[in-house]
Amino acid sequence: MLKVEAGKTFHTHKGYLKFDDLIGKEYGEPFKSSLGITFTTLKPNLTDYMMKSGRNTQIVYPKDAALIVMFSGIGPGSRVFESGTGTGALTTALAHYVGPTGKVYTYELRPEFQKNAAKNIQRAKLQNNVEMKSGDVTMGIEERDLDAVILDLAVPWLVIPHAYQALKPSGILVSFSPTIDQVVRTTEALRENGFVFIETIECLMRTMQVERGKTRPNTMMTGHTGYITHARKILKQLIQQTAQADTLLQEAMPEVNLTEEVEQENNEDMAEESA
Image (cartoon, rainbow, N blue to C red; front, side):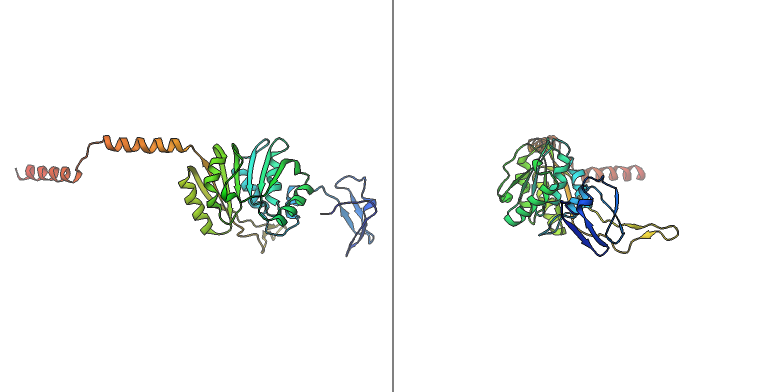
C-alpha cells in the first residue's frame, strides 16, 4: 500500500512507476511501468489498512476482527471501550463500524505502541472516531454506559468487574485470548460478575485454489490465532432476587422422605400378593 506523492518514483523488479503519471487517474485504471508491465491502482479498504498496519506487536487478523465486531453488536453511534490498543488494527475496525457519530475509547500502557497505533489510525482517516488514552484498566474504567467492552489483554479476568460497571444493561463484552488458560479464568470471572450467554469460539480460515479440474484447499492456512469469548451483562439485582426467590421456594416446600414412601408402597404390594 503506497501513498502517491507528486515528483516521486516507486521502483520494483518489474520497472519503476512515476507517481506523476498516476495523479488524477481513476481507481482501477491500468497503467504501465517503465518495462511495460501493467499495474492497476485500487482504493484501500478496511482489510488493507489492517493488514498493512505498521507493527511493533501482533495484530488481530480480519477473520477474528470480523467476529469480534459481529458479537459485540456495535454499529453507527455505538460507544466502545477497547484495551489494549497494540498496533491499532482492531481499533481501526471498531472505529470504522461506529462511524463519525460513535466513539472508540482505546487504552494502552506502552507509549511506543500508542504512538504507532495513532499513525495507523490516522492513515485510515478514522482518528476522529477514536479517543486514545493511557492507563491501567485492571484498576478501573472511567467510561460509563458503554455499548461494548473489547479486551485483548494478558489478564482480561482482572478487568471483568470494572467492565460490568462500565457497560449499560444488556451490554456486551468480547475478549480475545491466545491461550485456553486465559479463556478459563475469564469465563469464571464472567460467571461470577453478572454475565450470561457466555460462549467461546475459535475461527480457523483456509483459502481455496480454484482452477477447473484441480480445485482444492491451499496447503498453507491461517490456523490458530486466538479464542474469542463473548457474554452479555444482566443486572445483579435481578440475579439476587432470583436466588432469594429460589431459596424461599425451597423453604416453603414440605420435606418428603421419598425412600420411606417407596418402601411403604412395596410392602403394601407384597401384602396384596400374599393375600
